[in-house]
Amino acid sequence: MSLTTCNVHFSPQSDKVIYLSSPLLKQLKLAGKKSIHLKLGNEVITTELKALKRPGNHLYLSAGVRQLIKVPKSGNVYVLASGENEVQIGPLVGILSDSNVHSESYPFGGRTNFIKQIIRMGEDKAYLFGFTPSDINWQLETVNGYFLSPQGGWYRKVVPLPDVVYNRLPNRKAEFSTSISSLREKFVRRKIPFFNWSFFNKSDVYKLLDNDPEALNHLPESVSNPTPEKMKEMLEKHQFLYFKPTAGSLGVGIYRLTYHSKRGYFVRYRKGRQNVLLRFPNFNSLMRMLQARHGNTFNQYVVQQGIRLVEIDSCPLDFRFHMHKNGKNEWVPAGIGAKKAGRGSVTTHVKNGGQLMTPEQALSRTFGAQADTVLDKAKSVAIKLSEAIERNYPHRLGELGLDLGIDKDGEVWMFEANAKPGRSIYKHPALRSEGRASVSYILEHCMYLSRFQGGNG
Image (cartoon, rainbow, N blue to C red):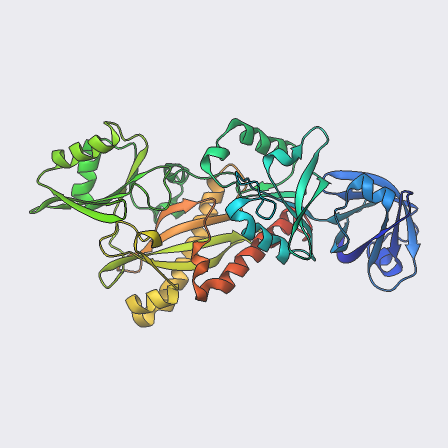
């Protein structure tokens, strides 16, 4: 198996010929061969092979070959000789998204710039394109993809099904539809690696890790669909709890419940733009308020042990670890953001008055000289937790957003894991290079899964 990069050129001949420069023929061990199987994505054709006296690694495709195999553009890509007379160019990488906004310059709505960033970073390594579910023709096994021109505009090209799919479908509703479930299965049946299968529900992650001793050390006690009796028992045991929707995001609908043996029960939550604090003399009156707002059963809710997190200015801190699989199929923390809660807020979300900081800033203010040690420990826990989630999850994962807390003793706790993490931490000026690293890990992992890195997906 030999892998190298080459410059792909288009030649006007109409016959089915591929020309390889002498150094490239030699590197791919194809000297003396008369014909080869040429592969792009899921398409393979047989074509005549001719040598070309030219220094450097060059590959010329006749118009006949180009049309048959649907090579989207000329320029630098990888070329892989996988033995058996087969040469593969690419990889062909599809980024799956969707959009309700059909605008030529923003085909993927709010995710357009992120998809652009990935394509730009990989343009001389691979053929990258964005697409939506309706762009696939399963009968012909092709995709009408969105490619990026050198000027930054979009153009469409029909290409074979890709070598790998990075799933960035934007919302739960789309993901849980039967058409998307069948789309994922069709890729899997064709052995096309599809990573970031779907959004998690909060309770799913806890169920996944229920029997994983490595992970359980770092999970607060959590109960899905809790009964009032269970909530009362947990409040008396832990003094405070979080009560949150299983499918929520951005901190919406979260309550913080606190119990003081002498002062009664307290509830904090957010209403509109305000933080609300209520006091109840007994547990039953607290329950009546929650049931009035959410009905008598809490089957869409999970209740979770509260942890006494480290604080700055009496405001708790938590940490978003954006984890990626790299080109060696290992988990690495690409970016870490520390979030300080707004005064009186239930969560650390910036929209609710929270403040974004670098982990070094936050930990040096809370742990002083021990800050580096605490951060290193948190990183290794984040890697362990990512490995545990992957071990217990039935589908392929390539990135995770872990919401971790660090308590006053420096112990690390995981509150949530997201399979489609947002990228808001990279808005912090000090985290921009981490944002670029995160994009480069996505590319590396696509190369790994498409076997263009000597790896095996």
